[in-house]
Length: 125
Length: 282
Image 1 (cartoon, rainbow over the protein chains, first blue to last red):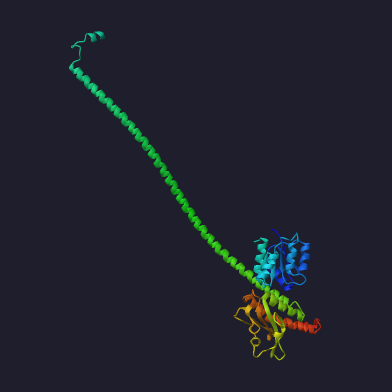
Image 2 (image 1 turned 120 degrees about the horizontal axis):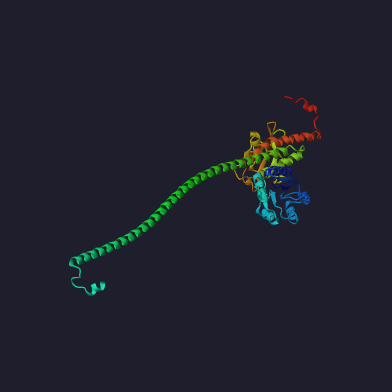
């Protein structure tokens, strides 16, 4: 059975822990954590990931900049990106999707929604 | 002789009347017999024709009977298949019902799991810091990230329990938050009663004067403060079961974690010696 890898980029340790718990429900998904955009890029440079789940508001490098950088990276330019954020306005959503994000989930998160989104983007049952 | 007979025929040679009559009778009979034979032959031919016709008709009827039997067989087969189909459809519906029941149960379990994960993470985070600032930051994180609070404030009661003093807040100007009298305020009522209160109104529309939720904070069964959630994020239109569980958890753990962290800070972050734990057996 195929194994998938996911990179979580989130500055809040609590949210990271929660996302790790949620994504542990997806079979054969290996999760790696990064605590901001720069850390995320570092991890993306050293390994290939099948999906990226990122927050927007983070210190050093925010999630939108990360999305831009990922989309210009030849290895990860097609990797699905899920944005998880407190910003719930239509403009924020539109902006993230225009930059190349594939899905947009607002906080507080519902674990089943995160799981369903990741499964859908990875095309797994 | 013959010539003679011809040439020399005479009336005396001519057959007699009786012979002629006999001949005529014979001829008549012969002709009648020939006619009868012809009739017989015709009749035989007609009968043969009729027989062929009947045989053909018989073959047709036999074929029809056979076809009818085949149709009867087919009809019976169709009926059997229809019964099988009905049985399969009924089994399919039963299986579908079991499946949707199972799916609903799985969703319920997944949802319960998610709620428990939220509570575990909140509890884990609240107790993962031993600095008052760290605990406060984590309380704020629980409120913002797990509950979806946008504007909120944590108040602690003063020494003589007459006022609630704002000690940490988010989304509101600090200057707008002043100490609140316990005796004559909605926040104070939560301290007095020791129970959480949640407004019936849309939590996104709550205000400092009319908070969406007030959570009393207790330490050792004594209420020492409150968390007032003035309003929630735009997408958080109502509080769910897990939010009420988070309110309970915050009520029971937030102040205790804060007090522990404060005491630890007061001892210059010095861990108590072993002697402090020696007499704990009950």
